[in-house]
Image (tube, rainbow, N blue to C red):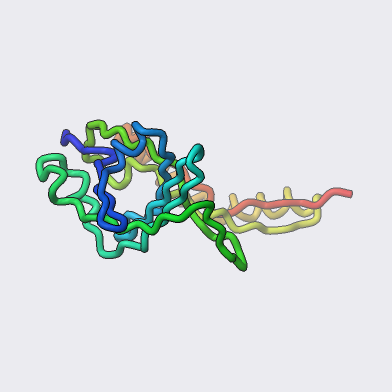
Length: 180
């Protein structure tokens, strides 16, 4: 198991003045971030409600999030983020497509473990094919299918019985009848 730093302290700079996300939060600033870890993108928004001051950084790109969250590097490895501050920020938007989420700037360490990709349970069987049939024909269809499979079924069932094997089942098709 590895340790992972969550919410690393980010250094911010505007007009020659600098601070960091933890100091700002501790002094009444709200912090929000828009990020895409896979693409290495980060944008920070700030607000001090009482002072009616808002800030927005430029989009940072090509960030190595693994390095940023590795606390052994120390905060000096984090990039300085340039922020534009204004009084009562108003922006023109055609569509609201911001993906900002509130940030708790208090860093904390979490444990990270390695897991098998299969353990993530992100795959599921493809839906079975459907055969739509008249209700009166379902029994005939099943009889024909069972008749065709009978010799193979006996051999397969006997093989698994001899080997005392447990096998998973998968539905490949289902017969659906539409009833009025």
